[in-house]
Image (cartoon, rainbow, N blue to C red; front, side):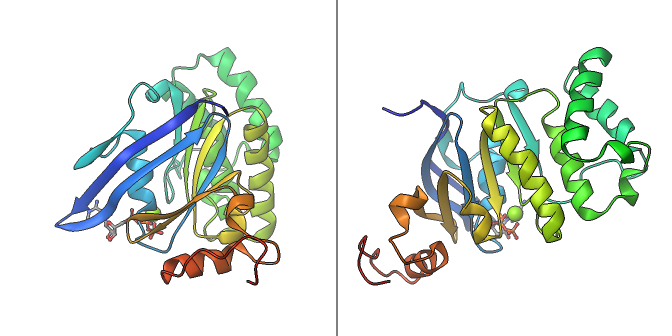
Length: 242
Ligand SMILES: Nc1ncnc2c1ncn2[C@@H]1O[C@H](COP(=O)(O)OP(=O)(O)OP(=O)(O)O)[C@@H](O)[C@H]1O
Ligand SMILES: [Mg+2]
């Protein structure tokens, strides 16, 4: 058996005004896995992450309890969630306090993360004046100050330029290496290709759940496989023509 599940849902179903946003989603993310959720706009990615975080109560189904909780989960929501009129350092102090870190613990951890995110020289700048990529890195830093074993990231690199995306991934890979279990929603197939485990949501349904090796035959690409699943085609046989 592999690592135990750190995130688990069973039959998760949620609708808004009678429209299904999540339709019977059952999944498991093993401890230490970097798991990517991809899907078009409105596919249900944010709803899934919010249910896992305990921010939405599902209509049916469940997030298996005992595997979450404020101290155990770091959340980086979709969009801008920093204090624009506070500096980088002041944002760290604020989010550190939210997570119950004392000044000493915050100082050390914040320093290390800022260095890793190449944000050290920007500590005195207002968060609102940073580039989009820097803001996303700072958001990630703020969400992991308390070393949560589980990290939920909702489209952290959407609209971020390629260089900043690379820097962001440098930080994410380091958290992954440290053993953090990461559930990442992304609009980019090339990002989920970097993940251990791929989930594909389409109109609220989980159409694909597996590792890249399991899902993508030699010579094919994940993009092609996802498109085929979306059109209802049978999965292409491993080793067969794409
Ligand atoms: N709070 C809400 N109130 C009403 N409808 C909602 C709400 N949140 C989500 N929805 C609807 O649920 C469906 C799934 O939305 P969700 O935000 O989970 O998708 P998403 O995959 O995160 O999309 P995006 O890539 O645009 O962020 C959509 O049809 C959306 O309009
Ligand atoms: Mg979303």
